[in-house]
Amino acid sequence: MPAPRRGRSLRRMDRRVRTVAGAVGSAVALAFAWRVAPFAQHYGDASWRTEPTPMPMEPPPPEAYAAFAAPAIASIAAVVAGILLLHRRPLPGFLLGVAGLVVHGAFGGPSFGGFVPALVLSLGLLRARGLNRAAAWLPLLLVALWATWWDAPGLGLTDWRMWSSIGTQFAWVLIPTLLVALAIGRRQTRAREQAEAVERAASEERLRLAREIHDVVGHSLSMISLQSGVALRVLDADPGQARTSLEAIRTSSKDALAELRHTLGAFRGDDAGPLAPAPSLAAVPALVDEVRAGGVRVDLAPLPDATGIGAAAQAAAYRVVQEALTNAIRHAPGTLVAVAAERTPHGLDITVTNPLAPQAHPGPEGGGLRGMRERVGALGGTLVAGPEGDRFLVRAHLPTRERP
Image 1 (tube, one colour):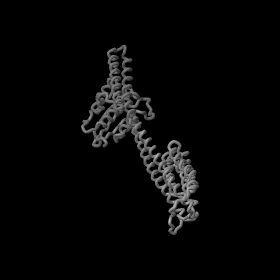
Image 2 (cartoon, rainbow, N blue to C red):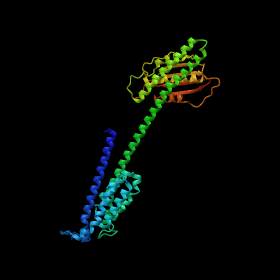
Image 3 (cartoon, rainbow, N blue to C red):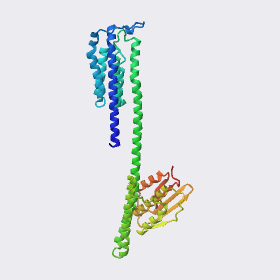
Image 4 (tube, helix red, strand yellow):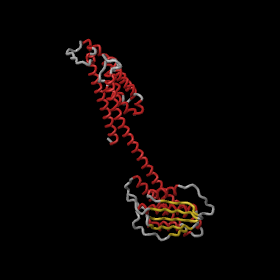
């Protein structure tokens, strides 16, 4: 049996055991209360006198018990049936149990036996309907408890002993109910917080996957578009150059497909094979050469030593350069793109600039820039991207030490 199904079966069995135990305990408590009811009925208010009075040794006559047989059976059956029904039909089961308590109070006389089924009914309704919905019906249960004492022999409505007995039973029912309600509330709060944490983690994973796919596919498609344009232009005049461009397209598509497969495999947790190494600062020259092969002019300043720069920061630096080059190819074709990286006392600065296209106008921030900003921000860095004078500037600051 799978673990989740086995866990559900165990919880269901545990719930049934608790329900049956509550029903049996309630039946025993009520049966005892009905057992002593004929004494109070037969001997009047002797047990309520303040002065010491010896209890009679002889039991009441058989006819005294016979008079209680029908209401006793009815009340016990109603309470037990109501408790057993609580799980499937909470409100009808609760009302049936309360009806049994009312019968007990109307015919059985005062006793403390009613608090046991009252507590079981209260906790059962609480677990089935929750505190807010159960609170609307709990006063009805308290009224049923009060009904067992309002006509106690020898006690009036102003007698402190009656209200003390009622208050005691109310406390025995309400205090455990409130404690269980608090425990359920804390458990529900923890479950809700855990669910929210899982959802946040899943959302972050989706965003990270979207960024990775955008970076891989977006750049590769831009290079394929660039190389195919070159191939079409020189197809007749320079077949050799056209062939070179087509080979570059084939290489770009194969590399993109392989990197995409590895990216998806990493997110799925597949162990099909070793993952490709994460891009680093040392891979930026190869990236620039690939773009230059498509006819884009790129000025790459000497890169600093990457010693001491974390792998995540180097991968983010590579992706920033990659996305900035992709945007320059797409929005400012034919311009000179300048790429520079500089070590600072506090981190690594990446700067990519290109002249604005003659008719370029700033639009809403696209997914690529937004992904860059999220990637850099996740490492505690900052990113600025937008027009600055007559050029478009992308500047990222990345901490050299990874967050703990």
